[in-house]
Length: 247
Image 1 (tube, rainbow, N blue to C red):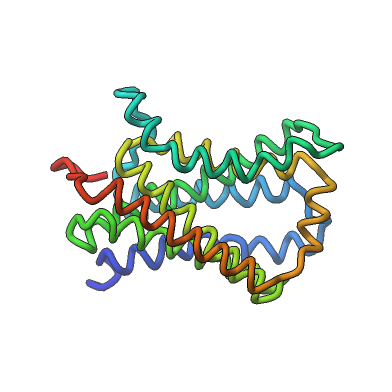
Image 2 (cartoon, rainbow, N blue to C red):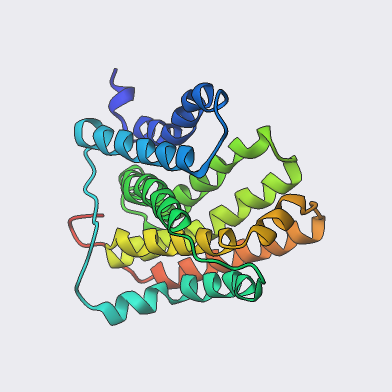
């Protein structure tokens, strides 16, 4: 019983919320055509369950919004903004690009659920586990964020999923750094949504992505990206001191 109340146990439980909810809903979804509305419901349920578990079990403070010093917050978020802008720029030339409210809502719900768990809860829990080692907490939460994408192994080849895991961990380093320094979860929710939604505005790009073949060269590129984001996180956090009240 003592272990269940430990920070390590809470990290494990928080990390399993997403796959557990998806596994349970899969029994219902497989009887229906999978749609964006089922995905919205799944992400909303993940958030609600995580929120309730935090209220009654994890009891971690979530910094939803910070209106102070916007210039410093923007500066901290700039590496992630640049990366997302570069990645999303290809979608702007798609011939069938069409902004869809349904996609916007879906991506905001995905961002809300995932960032609430992996930045809001896990960064705080890792800080306590690692005695306020900020880089360690950001790295730990990012690795867990990457590993959650192994759920895709049931429908995708291991090589492709390996790239997803490393990429998610890489962008998680930037998001975690932003959250720790700005105490503003809203920023990372928005950035997460922007990263997801633009490719989904184009059916052609989504179809091409589904046919994409794995290559070792792409895995090397993603590995280099992870090292770059790790260096950025280190550079931004090396002299950063937490206030007495941690995130």
